[in-house]
Image 1 (spheres, each protein chain N blue to C red):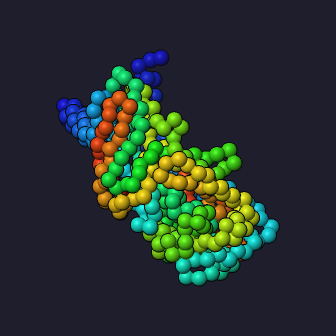
Image 2: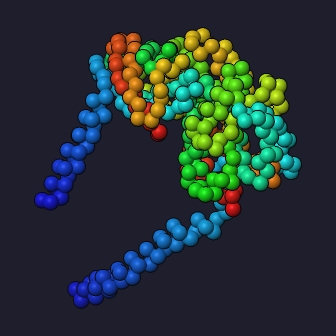
Image 3: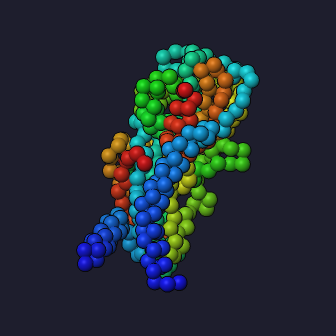
Length: 209
Length: 150
């Protein structure tokens, strides 16, 4: 290869460089901005195809009886937990609150309900104080053990108290999922514990469309 | 030259950050960092403390208990998901959380935590609560837990 050829080639590479850079930037922007919109939305929770609306239930809140069907037309986020739970329940209630904050005005179309799986320790007044600490729009309901179990079973939720040595007396194992019921009353989405506020917000926002 | 200065500044900053997290408490090679707890309602009788324990020493140790003036009782608990998808919580097996030499034990949400039973103080955002960790070998290590969102 002669010196002249070498000079010609390197100068043409030099001229092409801005064009190559520009194309790279355009492709990167396309991949970043456009491609995600072409793909169908990927839920963070597990999507269910429920042919039938979930069975209704009526439990007791501090303000009187509350039925699931009272909130038909809204998304309902249904959670089974208990106030004695120090870790998973406050984390979940706080994450949903952060998710609702991200939804802005649309959060008015979402109702969070916590059902107590510890009716012996959680009376309706205590439950109201508890859930409203996380968000004033939250509703807390409880009932007799039979009533709570009847409400929980159709969602595949079970719970079981177990006695512990030490100061806690007993603790309650419980399925700690967030169950999202669509505006027509179908169980549509189940979000596992530890999913995080951003992922919850994204799923709710998509379901509100 | 300018680049070298920036590097030194970054290195200085890194050292500062490292020492500031180390100053949380610790003795005998144990370093406790990032001690915090979730805000919880007054009506809730329980709370949870999360923290990280690094054993920089040459000797294995274990966290065996905790006390706090903010809690009627403080116990070492672990949350976990069982094989049927339910969250379960119970006192840690054997009553101890091992912190072998050179290793780190992380107490975090959805896992190990110090459970505060019968809260005696408010867990409001910004509160600073006293907690004393009891180690098998290092003995008592007092520290402050900050109540805050994650």
